[in-house]
Image (cartoon, rainbow, N blue to C red; front, top):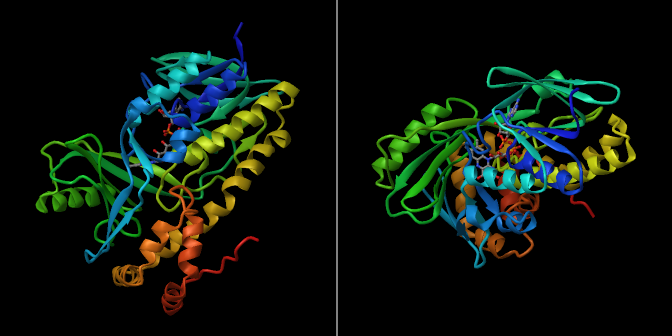
Length: 397
Ligand SMILES: Cc1cc2nc3c(=O)[nH]c(=O)nc-3n(C[C@H](O)[C@H](O)[C@H](O)COP(=O)(O)OP(=O)(O)OC[C@H]3O[C@@H](n4cnc5c(N)ncnc54)[C@H](O)[C@@H]3O)c2cc1C
């Protein structure tokens, strides 16, 4: 007879492991399927998370490679804006180590990890879900009262279950290199470098750094060009770097729940549309997912109607932020290099960058308010009007 788990989590990334940790800690029987030999294998991520994320989710300090409180932003023509705050703003984590640590924490609470196990199909029955997986060539059948899909970007499972697709996405590309004389995060804008998005050079543990970018097309080509350019500028050195490529959701799934099912993290599109950062938002939603499931398991009511509460709650927390940030992103994508340079010069010459840096209530994780402040600024508003920018958000009371 097949064992009946309370919950099967599909995907042992940080978000799936956090759901598993919380549910196992609340006394539920949890199994986690991870397709790789161990969590953290083949990750593709820069690992920047806010200080708030680190403290809220008690991120293991052993996985933090360094802390940072500043970044240099370069406009397409090379104008520099340096963002700086006195306090530490973010940590750069070793992403593979983070995944291992999060999985270890869930296992410590009793979650059972099944590595090398690729979930292929989920069938939802009246009183259980049946998950079909393949483990090292062998078929594996598992059953649980509910399933959580935390498969990250691009899994077909979500679509097959009739939950649709994420509304928009971009490709991320990144490689590890050695830096030369750089000790601060750098961000580069410009259509030649990363059309409509941005590129980065992030020091991790000296002399190592991560170079990467987001792009809707030709990420491989753009990354190659970026690395050659940074090498020519004497900022990095590399002879062999193996780039990784991964999709990032920019717009959430319309439906993140079903009968006995929840979708979380990048699979659900719970990602900052401005930067593509998804760890913090994914964890916030994982927290809500675990609470919702805990109650539903206790009440033995795992209907889609009950689980819809998860979506209501995470949308209440993130919905408006995601909406404003997505529109800001779409607007930015339409700007020419000349327009971006003009905005840079305006922001710099009027000290708007410094004002934003000093505004205590603006945070690393919530960009909607910064966007609203920026477009509410008289100088910027006039410039946007001249560019016919379609911003019409009203502030909530
Ligand atoms: C280049 C790049 C840089 C990034 N930098 C940052 C950053 O600095 N900060 C930040 O916050 N975010 C960043 N992100 C985004 C971040 O990586 C994701 O938002 C985050 O990994 C989402 O976590 P997750 O647990 O939802 O998914 P994932 O981390 O993708 O984990 C999903 C897990 O599910 C497993 N899996 C998938 N399908 C199956 C299956 N069918 N069966 C079993 N297992 C399966 C996978 O092997 C994986 O372990 C970056 C992304 C990219 C591409």
